[in-house]
Length: 313
Image 1 (cartoon, rainbow, N blue to C red):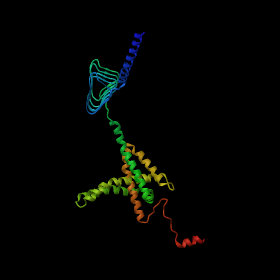
Image 2 (spheres, helix red, strand yellow):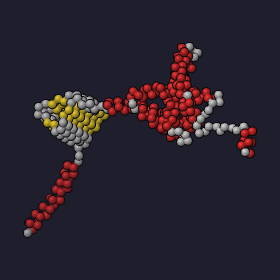
Image 3 (tube, rainbow, N blue to C red):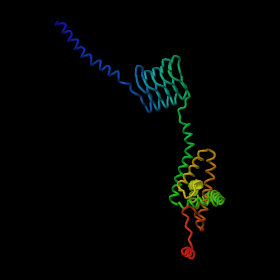
Image 4 (tube, one colour):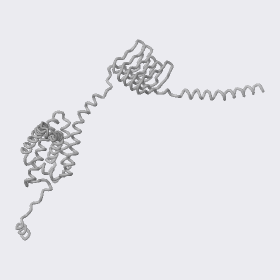
């Protein structure tokens, strides 16, 4: 009995000694492989080594061991002789797969994929894949111009209505009453301003003024386009409805036309000319006692005799 009890005690003591070692071994097996992320340089996974994701921005990657994640190189080649559980992606480089290579996911390369007999790929293998954003950027670039013009016209129009609301009414009325005169004056300004700027730039004394006129051509164009959008909106939204509503109506038409490739160039060329001409006609009328138009048109003064008669009639 004593020997049996001693054997049981020794067995229990050995169990207590072995249990922590087993727990440590189980804890060590839970540790995940480390990821390899390199900005500039190369990553080499040695045979028998186990890593997680491999990401190289500029350099290369060589996998002789095991990569449990993806292997991605933005600029450089990839060589696989071991095992990759994820995908292999070379955005700008060659992918080489040895006969012992095992890839669980896809293999994409911007250049050629060199595959030796015996290599296995679980997913798709595509070479000459384009990883650039050239297509979306080109489409976005085509829209940036019309969007920038539309936003500039909207902001300029709101500023004009805030600073000179009666002047805006006068411009809309001038275009309605004298469309041919507005077009003629606009063409005259569109031709004469660049000619005068060139003439001043040729002379030494007028060079600063000529350069200033050249630099102001963009502002003239924006102002004319804004007046044209305002006049178009005022033609749809008549007084006494609000000016901002009229501006938004004309601006919406201009923004929609700006998305049409060929039509927008024609409108952006002709509309500023008409808008500038209407602005000049309105300015001429205001200086020579013409009508100012709009809801804020000045009231007609009644002569004193007529006022007396009207009051005592």
